Amino acid sequence: MPHTIAVPETDIDIFSEEYLRDPLPAQEELREIGPIVRLTRYDVYACARYEEVHRGLTDWQSLQSGAGVGLSDFLKERPWRPPSLLLEADPPRHDAPRHVGERLLSPRRLRGMQDEWARVAGELADEILGAGDAFDAVLDIAQRFPLRVFPDAIGLGPHGREHLLPYGDFAFNAFGPREGIVERLAPTMGPTVAWIDEQCARENLAPGSLGAEIWESADRGEIPPEQAPLIVRSLLTAGVDTTVTGIAAVLHALAGDRVQWRMLQEDRSLLPRAFEEAVRLESPVQAFFRTTTAPTTIAGVEIPAREKVVLILGAANRDPRRWDAPERFDLARDPSGHVGFGMGLHQCVGQHVARLEATVMLGALLDRVDGVDLAARPVRHLNNTLRGWDSMPMRAEPRRA
Ligand code: QZP
Image (cartoon, rainbow, N blue to C red):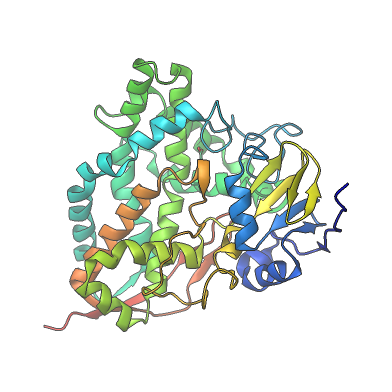
């Protein structure tokens, strides 16, 4: 008989307003308590150290996604919408939708969009800077740029696009508890959910678009046709608020840092690393849950079957056991291996979209200004999963002639 190690407990509430405002102190505490801890507030296990988070993400056999990747166990509670075929499914059900998503969002496929997206980024940068040196990195750039390129790429019509951000915001909140934010927003979501579901229909997606291509995958028999709308829905859910937050994160990281701004101006091959390092540092997606399929040992602790385990990506990405000076945004570091996009079977299928959006937008700014500074304290947007901002006032330093 392996002897059982007692699991330390804590009453830290990872969805409290205080935690969402600034999770860093509590995340340090969670890492220090031990490799796995029990959160008494929600009766779940939590991992906050890199090693165990990585392990949890890569063992999909013991730690499933099909019971939901939020606090709620879909076996015990009815989900707020039909589960995602990508995020909330396990092999074998997950495999065909994943292959469709991978091909659709592959670097190869996205190369065809690069020039157009770079042109739009330049146009947006000219508009903003044409109005003066002051701008809001969230409202004017991080929200506007993805909304100019991604809905068109999916093939959406012109009307109703204002539903995209609120829908994503709700979906990411819904991985947390019902009480609080979800309860407050739910009564307002009806028209938004209806609009999203409507956009997934074949006749509402432009010919040649990513959305249309999902339907063509069904024509080829790669997925059953009834799965096509759900995969379109995945793009609409996962593809907007996330990239908004990622773009804001890289601008936030570079604000006030002339040295690293200059490095990027002089060596554009560093752009993807700048984005990756910002995703590590900020971890726009802070945490996801898994559910044990059978008794599972993590860090010597045997966890019974059907328990929820929260993997705190944001804490792992700043674990000093894994990263030197983890709080530093450092273009000289190799950020690969960060878990900001997850790891393993479910690792972000949209990461190439995110990287392309962020690098072309940042590239357009590097071409035009010699740095950015915060002009006021950024305003946090509180969400149970996404760590982002409502506003980030900035000033651009005009380019030396
Ligand atoms: C993934 C879906 C973007 C991820 C961090 C989370 C995510 C959310 C929703 C979906 C997929 O609806 O498939």
